[in-house]
Amino acid sequence: MVLEIRKYPDPILSKKAERVEKIDQDIQKLIGDMIETLYAAPGVGLAAPQVGRSIRLIVFDPSVRNEEGKLTVLINPEIIEKDGEAIMKEGCLSVPGLEAEIKRAENVKVTGLDKNGNAVTIDAKGFLARVIQHEIDHLDGILLLDRIGFIKRDIFKRRLMKQLKETAREQAVK
Ligand code: NI
Image 1 (cartoon, helix red, strand yellow):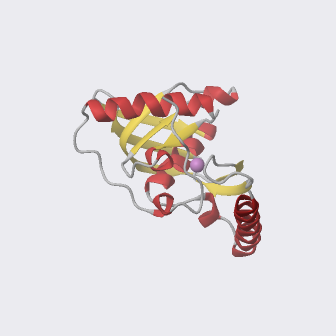
Image 2 (image 1 turned 60 degrees about the horizontal axis):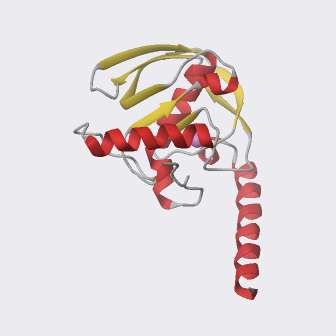
């Protein structure tokens, strides 16, 4: 089932997500739905809070953008090592209309569990490292908006509020 993607300023996007304690049927169903939602969007990565569940679960597939990598599910992911620095343009399904150059670590080592509860370690470089850092940010309630300068953020927020007001007005007229 394709799920609705929550958009800024939905408060769930700014909340720190809880660890997954048990990988049960409910989690398996959510994983399946998140993968469907990822490809339907289409996007390269999706975190559970983006579909309304404040838990530490991410899915990603860089091959959607013809980048190296494959479909991966990570539960309770943690970055245990990072090095280097890289700047790359990013967008986010939850912040449509915003693209910004973001500085992040160039390489990261990540641990977590796969969908069967097996421990996995990923040595990620380049685009993959970027996607993983972006998705883990979502689990900590951090959006692209929190990683750009305040002037850019202010401009984006003003534009969005104006749009939201206009939409509300149009709906009121109908
Ligand atoms: Ni995002």
